Length: 289
Ligand code: C2E
Ligand code: MG
Ligand code: MG
Ligand code: MG
Image (cartoon, rainbow, N blue to C red; front, side):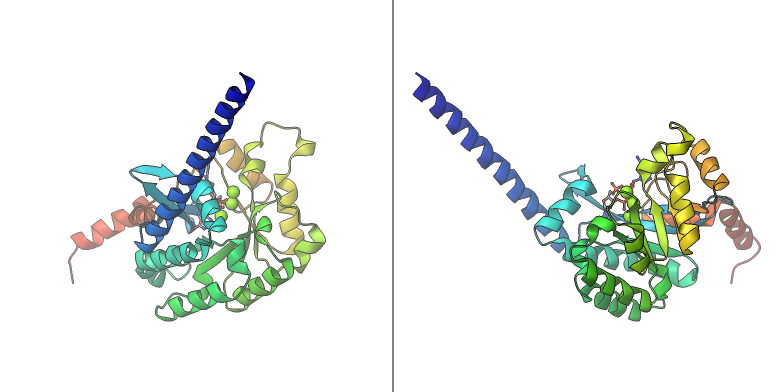
């Protein structure tokens, strides 16, 4: 009796484990193919000046559709980080930024795109070399491609610091993503070559719902001021959050209140705004070259 029962349980477990592994293997296989075939898309989320609502830059976010269904970056980026595909993915995202927005970046020299890099990308100068070579074929300035790194993204903190320093020396501003969710101390932060802190969405979510004394966002803004760094708030969904952030001295933000991540053409329309569209219509109405 119990022997058969436990055999059945064991067999079921083994079957489940095999299924899980198969699914993982096939996800990895599908991802490898998608990267090879250049099927990883990029959506660009506007970063706006809170005061004027002007779009000053955008964050490049990888997108992947498998058999018609969107797979969340939180799933496939983590998969890529575990199966050695992340470097190829980062390269693909960069290629696509240059392909889709290169002309726009060359024409708008103050506009920038930030790219998310993973821990693996910060273990050596490999990606910096790729970036330098890629931009060398264009008129895009180094300052127009910015690097977003997370604190948990440092496998080897000393190596990451050196690599970030090299990016910065090459002219690429450094953003610390999801700031405040990592474990790094303020003294450690002071040793990092950093230009901008991104306030994590979790600290923006709680604005208006917590005691003033326990809100984190104003403290991050204050740290930014003290260290002479810029601050970008992420995940702003409501006007009251935008107002709160402005009142406490934040200048830039991104979030669904302003725009979700957009395909390249939609981003360009968003940046140019209704005024630019009207101007274009007017000038094309008053005579063509
Ligand atoms: P992240 O870099 O912190 O990017 C911000 C995430 O918040 C994006 O999620 C964005 O779509 C989402 N978001 C922005 N505003 C709002 C809002 O108002 N409300 C809500 N609910 N969400 C908002 P996404 O695109 O799913 O990306 C998740 C994470 O995956 C990113 O977090 C980043 O860590 C990673 N990731 C995305 N693309 C890449 C990539 O090309 N390379 C690497 N290494 N990581 C990437
Ligand atoms: Mg980011
Ligand atoms: Mg972030
Ligand atoms: Mg985040």
